[in-house]
Image (cartoon, rainbow, N blue to C red; front, side):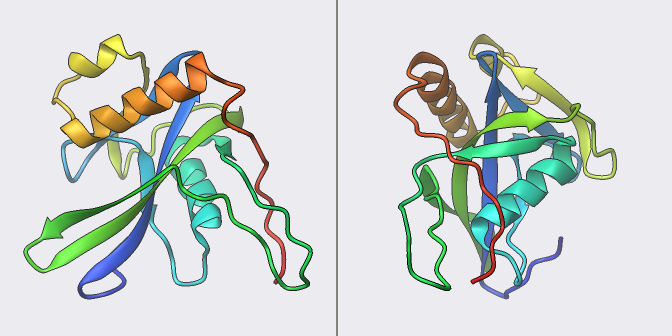
Length: 167
């Protein structure tokens, strides 16, 4: 998707973990290993964008991981907070504010979005150091954090399915 705003766009990154492996894509345009993700469209909240991007880029339906505060107010829906936020420079005049989520696959078969990616694969912690081309230090750190938190301490992260609702 093209940039929505001139200076800053909001994006989602989804680190999907299954069987002690994280799902990564080799981005065709950027030539880098990245998590699933992309721009948050103007008519989406971050959760809906994350679910859409995961499905478009991998064929998987996923469940975001995190805590959803209970809400009882009509017209209000609490959102799962991203696990992390970052801001990263795309060009001299453009940045992305990234909302980084952990997720688990619910259903579907992993499929390669050939128009956007060269490759898609499940990677163990050991694989992260040998992938070619190498990934950025930030992506590697997020991969290791997601693997550590979701593999070693599954009870620490509360899971809540995300279902769209009307405000």
